[in-house]
Amino acid sequence: PIRDFAKHACTNAKPGSPLDVLRNRKSHQKSTYKTTCQSGKADEPYLSKDMIDETITLLFAGQDTSAATLSWTLHLLSLYPEIQQKLYDEVRHAFNEDGDEEKK
Image (cartoon, rainbow, N blue to C red; front, top):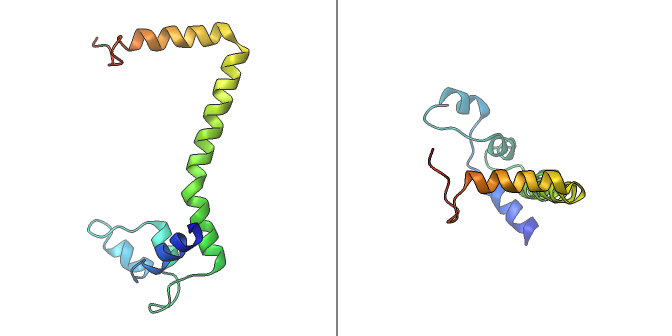
């Protein structure tokens, strides 16, 4: 299903040259991803295995790096309880009991 979604994303990228994108930057911006998908012929979107693999990587890379960063942060905080307590106190000070940000 993931590979089908990535193929669908490339297939549905509308044709247009990168030069057209630059000319119409303010009214019609496109991402680098769409430009790459459109790099084939106008009637044949770029659908190589590599492009589909890149699409899958882009979809999941942000999620994985955020999860890994958070995991390491929590692990390191567990190794240093005094820093963990200091962070806890700072967060509690910044937010009231309802979880809303304190008004200063």
